[in-house]
Length: 348
Image (cartoon, rainbow, N blue to C red; front, side, top):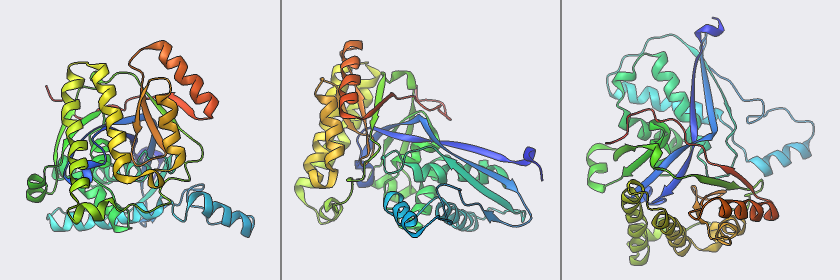
């Protein structure tokens, strides 16, 4: 088989603009695909079914024992191979349970990614989403797997290997662009998915991604929020409802181009998260990125669970320059957030 037979699909990193992390609590979110960073999967027909390790992200050869230990300390034990294996299993199970017939040809899956690790940009689900798109094309069943069910299928593959998350990331990676999501409990229980509404990406103002090369203090302390929410903790339930309401308000705010209100909602989103999770869980470096942005009056919040933040300068170019200088002094990377293309028409 030649290179012309290869199927390639790219999925992008994700920025949670408003409402996260309420997606895991029957809430609402607004997110967009981040074109700055992506994962790409290549599927090539082959005699046997092969999952190709990545030379960097799935190392199996080391120069020494200390090098192996450093790699594990810096990057963890896992690369992308386990994600591709899990997707293949869940994809086959999904097709079997939905009476979707698959031909018997084999393939080789390989991947590449430039999404920074531990940056809260949804690098794992991007690999799975890109691989799913390859497999849908390879088996020619795009029209047999409903678009709104694909994020749930992607998440099921991640859950297979112990990743705990909500649907937000997978939804925006399937749909691309800017998406409003409502994870209404009754709809979720009845259909297995939420209500997903693509929005016009031109509604977004210019936003800036801020991240650090060393987000390693994120997630070192285990969060009790999920357990408290399940147990009916009134303060957690109330805060999470407030977070979900921010996405509902934000949808109108974006449509009305109300910059000052958008800034207020972004800041409130982070403040509510901080109130629920606490500083030890959020991590000192992650909090510092938000504080640096706010020191020049910019609005700022996490893109996901920590590791990177998204900032908005409602006061214009002079404020952007001050933010650039503040990030330079703090040794944070700041770059303009590029919005990934939408794969489906936005809601009118």
